[in-house]
Image 1 (cartoon, rainbow, N blue to C red):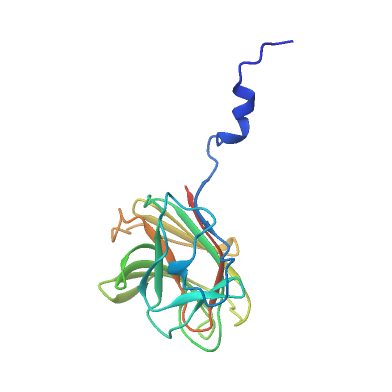
Image 2 (cartoon, helix red, strand yellow; image 1 turned 180 degrees about the vertical axis):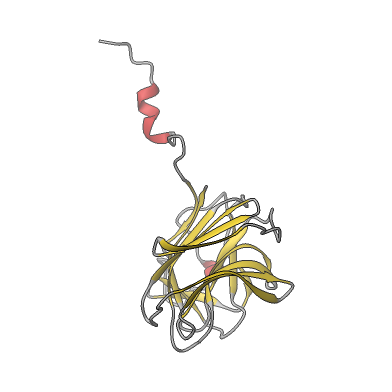
Length: 202
């Protein structure tokens, strides 16, 4: 028998090389009508909380739901800019347009948005700079209102890569806007919902 050094007891506590570390996780389990600003995520850095950047997002049926028709942004500070963000986003015909998740949010006019658009049949990466939306990458994808899509965006320096349901990868390699911004979150308008929001490193 070998001597017990005590290391074996720590095996489950130390991430293996290359594994993702969860910085923020939220399944939005809470009382209906609770604003995200009054809701505590499942995992978060310290006491960091959701911040209403623009519009109103609250909890309905244990999902985050938008309550305004335009310019919806809620963020939470994950403490790192180079991360992977993801969420299950369900679009609604109630509000047409391109919406989803957002990374590196500094305010209501500056962010990187990973979106779906049912009427356009598109999956897009937008640079939202000083209020101007510029498509930096896109793919033609059939999007059905009422269906959940897992959107993910990986931020690494000037490189941003996005996927939908793990495929249709799109990317942009000159993402200098808000490169050091550590706040990430949601942009879902009226009747759109999001669930299983996560921020990991990497």
